[in-house]
Image 1 (cartoon, rainbow, N blue to C red):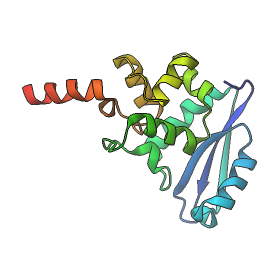
Image 2 (image 1 turned 90 degrees about the horizontal axis):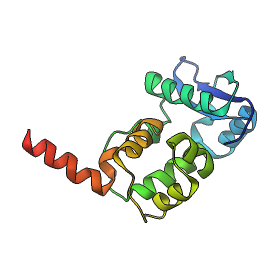
Image 3 (image 1 turned 180 degrees about the vertical axis):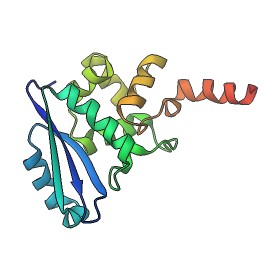
Image 4 (image 1 turned 90 degrees about the vertical axis):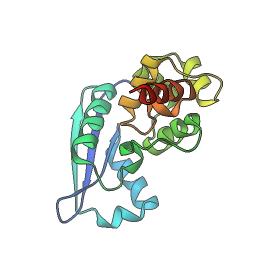
Length: 161
């Protein structure tokens, strides 16, 4: 994971609603990236920036704010719906959407780089503890139930209840 300070930024519309909440070491550059690729960028009326000592603290704050404020365009991070495509793809999509690099994600999930590459290649399923951390860090974008080995267990528990 990159060392040094990182920021959580909030893009807010004229009505005061959070459009998007993100995390970056360079929030100005990320805002420029959004301006060139996101159709909603024209709605930005205000940008709030909160700096943190390290990227891990910033990611934790970002996840908390997304969960609390439910920004309009952070949909990929808020979903709790079971994904209809492989969890490896859901995880890859999450990393792409957030700009999170694989080594940084591995550190946040508490796994090795080799382990995350196995998850992303569909070559391995996570343990329950790792699947739960992935779900928590991704705010449900990659739920525990999306991993085949856990979906069977969850379905069995629900059927027995």
